[in-house]
Amino acid sequence: MARVTFEAIMTDDRVSAVMSGRCLNLLAMPPENWDGCFILSSK
Image 1: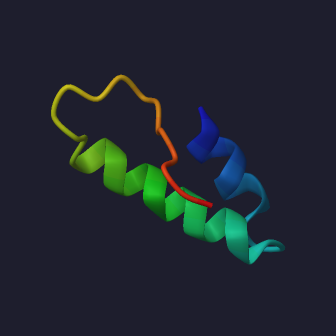
Image 2: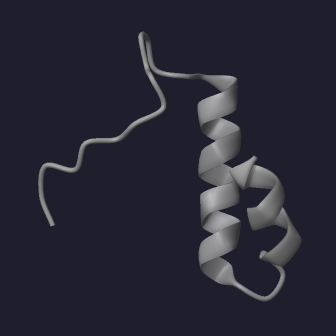
């Protein structure tokens, strides 16, 4: 799982700490009918 990888390197990488937190939030409250993909609508 991505969260495990982010947690393994987050002490040296601030972005990984943020991503780990996002993973935890999505696990706790997944969006309804979410298939795990994000469609970016802007840059």
